[in-house]
Image (tube, rainbow, N blue to C red; front, side, top):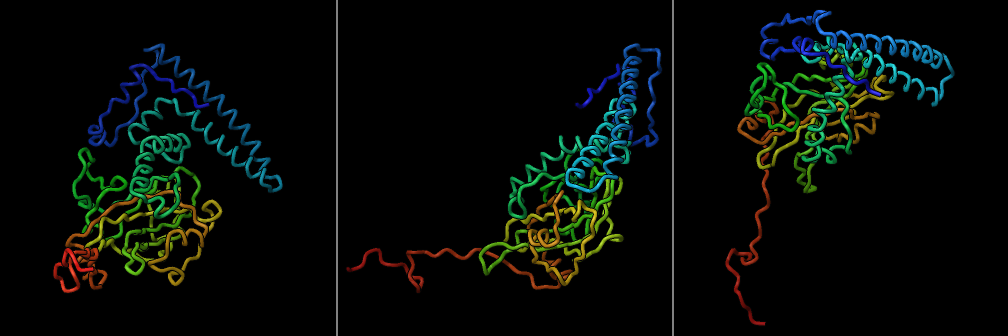
Length: 364
């Protein structure tokens, strides 16, 4: 059962009365605990919180002893399930033991978060589920990223891309200065995505796991089949990530296919450029060996996941339409002739093969 947060009185509340602007100006803002002996209700709340923490720490110690016994026991499916269950319960008890602490609440609200601590991972996970996840699920469903690219699933990671300043046609009101992250499904300018973005991944597991990253365009025209085909713009494997290791770096990963900038062809509707993070085998503990000769730019996401046993855990996507910068990308970066697509002209049934108007009536 999740413990009810004990709210301290106005003396506690005053410690959280920092506006975003004041925090930005005062980077050294620190938590100042209210004086004891001023408010009896606050003092009693602290006493209850302390007693609850002692109780939960004792429960954690007992569960850790049981966990140690299971780890030493012979491997089995039941044993593995028991270990996983105990680890999850220990994590929750660690979080619950601190979640009512006024200082923890202040730090979370003011962005002074240490993701190595279970309580902050728990709070960030709940915030993601409550605020960010519904938007992602709505966008990928409304714009048919699922099922066009992959079956319906529930993202467990918060993936953010940063193409730098000016990538959005219009910056949303209230966006903090220096923030270049965008909401899932936003339209970006092709001229501002010619260089690979910075990738930030908010995950909630303390241990390091390996992921594969793929940037896919599912909307390239397939003229022969009168349909669409996928184009793989970027493929990186063996990317190490954890709750405290959030920035993706190609220095300690394998770039299988280098970044190719988005280039929605002229005459096509908007393209959904989708960046996906897939957990690698054995719960992200195994590396995968993927060579550039083993894949192509037309390798589909489903084939990639099936062949290398990848499990998609998170995604984000942005949309683009053709503009004059796309012509420059084809010429200067891709060094290809730019294709132009269009619909077949409609046949007028009232005209004959010479273009003359057919007679309305004929002799039978």
